[in-house]
Image (cartoon, rainbow, N blue to C red; front, side):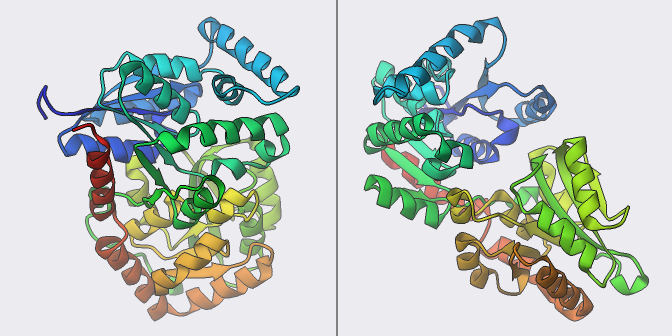
Length: 410
């Protein structure tokens, strides 16, 4: 990296700890010799410590935009006004962006202060922020669609102003993207149908340097220990299939525990414990740095990728969890969403498919799986191999680097 190297500005409304996809992109681009600056939001104090750990190790610089306090109040007033106008008719693009995220102007202003050759938005609010900064600097912009934002949440789909704002932002700005990527093949196809342009799929895989040094060899279940199932996210909450898995744990013949990592509400924790049917079956673990997720997962017997099919975005996505479990060398249970059902044949022995609508059936599948010790060992070996031969960032990042290089001005 030299002062003459191309400069890139990546923009997200989220904390970097909650957007590992952006962190991977920033790390890969910096390692490839680009000068990288990240503009990110700050609005959830418990994530500050995790952000600080990422910043301390980063080879890129950053700016945090405060989404709270008195400084953010005027933007939030504009956002409320934009929403009120949206109830009376179509909003122009700049107001649609503020109806969606009032602080998009602050993100754009922070990004525009960074001299860059390409502005790359992550998260839907990152798209108008990147486009605005690029216009001010006379440079191209790009967009990474980690989700199909038209159908990202049930709340957004039920809100006509929010739905219209999302469509306006994307219909106005996607055609002008110099680089356009998405987090799964089915998300890419959904964008092609909705906006006439198909983004480049870049899977949510992770670098091999985050993997354990060697495959873990847990004690056999025949020694009397329970099977340990694992799930992680920033927040442990509803809408992620955990209720069904707690019920499945309670119906298994083989003793089993469910270990959940993330911030959790006390009432929701009590609900899961009740669904499991007996004390001691659910264990709650503290959040940890994104770069440690694979090593932390390796000690467990099975990972859970239990996405629900609604809202529709969840049916289309392939989440970080899938590829973290592979990197950790542990098999996983995939719920039968469209995207995960399409992926399952590629994972072979490393994955089981199950329906969240049938906790008893899931319990039966897990009992059969854990009763077959040679099969469990083969599944762990398959997961370890797949992460090194196909599903790792060391390979996938080449597609990102090619796309960015092709988008930069000559």
